[in-house]
Length: 352
Image (cartoon, rainbow, N blue to C red; front, side, top):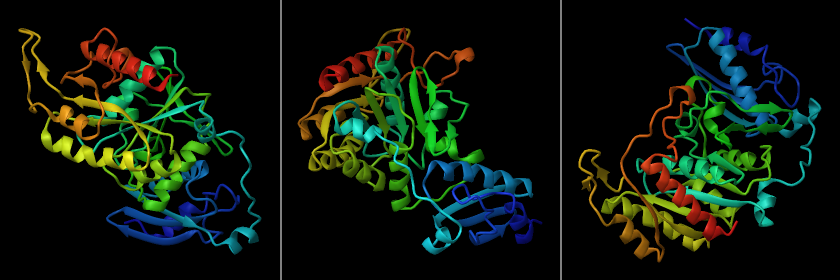
């Protein structure tokens, strides 16, 4: 049975990234619980929510699992200022123009893809919109901002992780799209507990500490609903534009209207509606079956004084085992053509 002493001994080899001292030397371990070889840790560090914290998470999980833990849950808080000063902590460097600066200057357009509820295919729309924009010669990035339900790396068939050099994160490039996701920084799906302020700080670091290229578009795959992350996006990026995803079902459209209403109140421009799972089309007969009903997209567009940009049917991408990406549609696929047309409409609306 794993003991507290064994865990603390394992952490002696893990250094706090900003202060260069071991976690145990700094007294960083504020809480340690062990139950059935499942370890829960609360760690105090100099700069929570930074690129270095992401590296530290992986080092801590690796060390504690090496001591015999089956799973590791992590929470972070900030070390007291006097402890940081005592050990020679330094301030952060000015990194120059950030992606937020580019957005404010009109160089990069932020497009948030959101929905009122989960399970409507919002991430699939985000991924395929980003890929389709890149195919049209645009410089595109995507942030998987669904902190708890991150899925973009799996959908795009990404197995590598971003490089972290100093205080800068270099995104993964896949299908000519630069990708960043919280999923990259979680070891073996180990749980990491985030509260509202930490969510906002992590998003802020995705904007400020990632070495993005000079992007034309940055697509944000938001969590469903109107929670902390959605509110942070609205306050951080007042010029962000939004696409709402719904299904034809009346309930999905009803709850999506809440997300749309928040966008309007914060003066975000709604580009339009994507009605996903709009119908199922038989390959044999060509007949369309409206599995989830009809009218949801039209009703949502009416309520928000917007328009339907695309109706995407139920369907599965053609799987290429050599270039595996289980949720990305090729241009030759019927649904891939719909996403290509969606990208054209977005480009025309944004004017970039």
